[in-house]
Image (tube, rainbow, N blue to C red):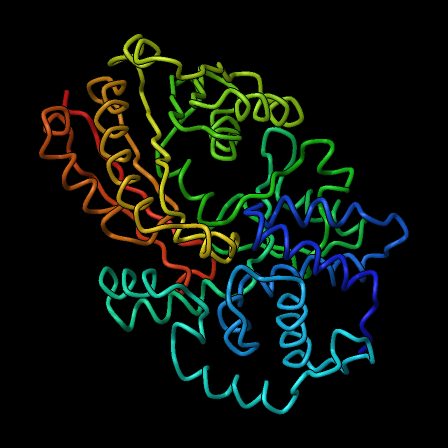
Amino acid sequence: MRLHRNLVFTVIDSLNFIFNEGEYADKVVAKALKKDKRWGSHDRKFVAETIYEIVRWKRLYAEIAEVKEPYNRDNLWRIFAVWAVLRGYNLPDWKYFEETPVRRIKGRFDELSKIRKFRESIPDWMDELGVKELGEKKWEKELAAQNEQAKVILRVNTLKTTKEQLRAILMDSNIETEFIKEYPDALVLKERANVFLTQAFKDGLFEVQDASSQLVARFLDVAPGMRVVDTCAGAGGKTLHMASIMENKGQLIAMDIYESKLKQLKLRAKRNSVFNIDYRVIESTKVIKKLHEKADRVLIDAPCSGLGVLKRNPDSKWKLQPEFIDNIKNTQREVLENYSKMVKPGGKLVYATCSVLPSENEEQVKHFLTTEIGKQFTFVKDNKVLASDSGFDGFYMALMERKK
């Protein structure tokens, strides 16, 4: 296996942006892939996957390379050399690799792989928190699952096509997919491919959405003709799913504190032929008050630590701070208490996060049910999805009903 200079330089530049300038890996990768129009799919795959791999295993590789943050360019080359040696590449005779201790790298890898925080490449504080909340055995399994490459999952837009039709259409573009049992709207790619370039995507026949995330809209039990509020809609993956289950009938109110995210959702809705969405930016509490006791269904897809989606966002392991998790728990309490007031008597509420920590999940629901507004709700059921059990993202959702 040969290393190509221009591809490796792109990887090094990208790692510098992510590790030293705090940029987000997905944005950096997207930019890197536009760098050279002559690259074929193999080149692009090498660039994207190598960047993500090194970001995912940063702590382990840096420890083997014996470099400390902030990383200068020489440090980044040493980290890259560790990756290349462990991946079985023959190092070319470039000056950057002149003193690479190949045998020592392999020996250090074997040695450090016995210690979980290095083996799974995770900050000390995060490892301690995971053990505290999930217990040693469960956390160990979850961490290993979160370090696997995420599968590409599509959600069929049932307003325009069926799962079977979409599968056949993608097959014509040489993209093979499989159905997933118990996920009625999902197709999983057999091999990674850039599905955004397909005509089927441009025609709005599907969205890319993890299988765990696809459970939420059905958990909320939405139906055509209802008034449904998605309180933290973001760019709207779950909003669009609800719209398709509602068959474009009824009113779907998508709210967010960021107008830019709702603009993104508008574009996606247009492509999906979804036209029952009403967009509202949460600029003040008035926006919420206007809807008190007016909604049949309310979804609170709460801001969270994202510790269920590390396989998708490996750089968040290095960006997250313990204080952020403490602060986000306060935010979760606030949104639960404030936004739940929009549910009308007899209506239903779902509180969801993409975290696996009980303190962000069950414990928040338990606390909510003791509050003044929470006492008006009955807990119906919840679903705790671990990546180690499902193979998909870690997720949590709790369904509650407002008493009549």
